[in-house]
Length: 354
Picture 1 (cartoon, helix red, strand yellow):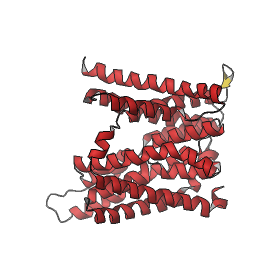
Picture 2 (cartoon, rainbow, N blue to C red):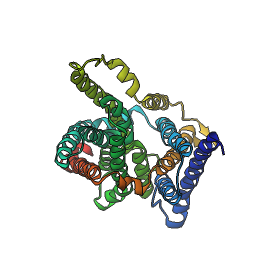
Picture 3 (tube, helix red, strand yellow):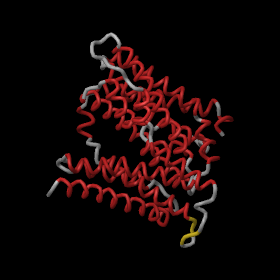
Picture 4 (cartoon, rainbow, N blue to C red):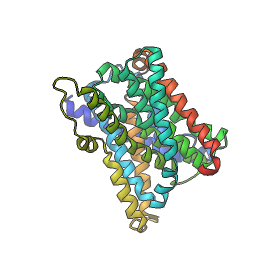
């Protein structure tokens, strides 16, 4: 079997899992009267089980699942814009900005202090802090070349982030019900205390299904505002590293403009454009009895499920725990602090959150 066949076969497998997982929500509604677990999280669970049953996953297969996890997620986010208006985006998402900024400072502080106590490397602490407060693996991948992290440090951080990110994505929708959180409170919690964008989409899908909310996207709105903070975090670390290199022979100059170009998440621009088109009513026309925006929203959910299937094929439990207990502990403590911060905020400022 050629490398391209394996790659495209993996992409096709993610699409099939995504389709079946999306279909499972209708089956849950028919059998149980509600969605118990959203399509994206079903896809993640199925792919995780398959990954851990398979004897090995070669690099060509991984290339396909990586394409699925990144590209399908980005396309899904862009299509989600067709279900929203600017009023939606500037509402819950921007109101969460104070909490987002506080959690960024908290995450890096905790990761640095706990990392020193656990004797992990400084780079591992930076990567865990960035991954926890911004957007999981994307933040780790962005910060790694800036701080010159080693492959081992990247692996440690990824392992710590994936473990607790998956736990949060599965548990938060049900925790919201137990704690009687409002929709906005869950949006703040899910959008600020789940690491990866794909996991937020998955948790949101489960929450929507549990509460029959249709095309509600509050958590994702908060997460997209949080994701844009990666630009400023990357710039900050670029300045820090540039200053450290000033007295180093051959340090070279770092272009902040290039950092912005490399770190700006272009899918957010696409999301905003689609939301703008929806705001002026472009997707209001009917197709087969439903608005075009509604069909695009369904396509987005399918893409999210397919993306989560790609993520699931990356999670080998043996690999996660073999990366070392100290980085795992560092990731867990940092994650707990950010989660606690979000919970305290949404309760302390319940009137502001809504």
